[in-house]
Length: 181
Image (cartoon, rainbow, N blue to C red; front, side, top):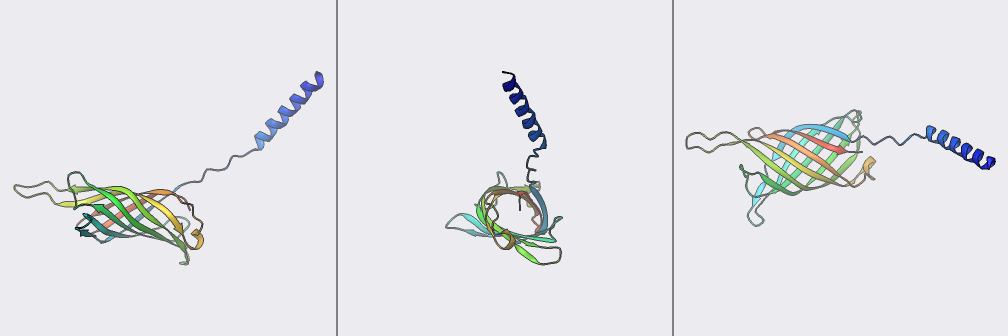
């Protein structure tokens, strides 16, 4: 019996020692990237589908690792701009081209826009005049479908996108959340 107890004590001591040396994997830190740019195309209303298609943005961002991140996004949404309740984003395409600090092209991450919403900011109406849209906030889910170059094996996942656009100038700021590459 004494030998069994000694064996259990030694086994526990070795297990505790092994556990003390075990270092759990560091969690992968999701990247948040900010962009600035412009709405390049307002999109076109298509009577047959009752959608605005091809509402496009070209945005540029940077982070610690890369010099330039060029994001292009094209949204489709239902109906004409609805200043009261907003519009539902119904699809679209996006591409993120990545360049090093030395200016070398490293590859692209690309995918589809799956869902989202557009909320319009409208000026207050004045005596008989309707309010005018002054800005909009777009929130969407971007599905990573694939990549090229250094990002050929990027894993399929969904990231969050949010942007604010000045309607009169087209100037836009955007952020992508939860992007790991």
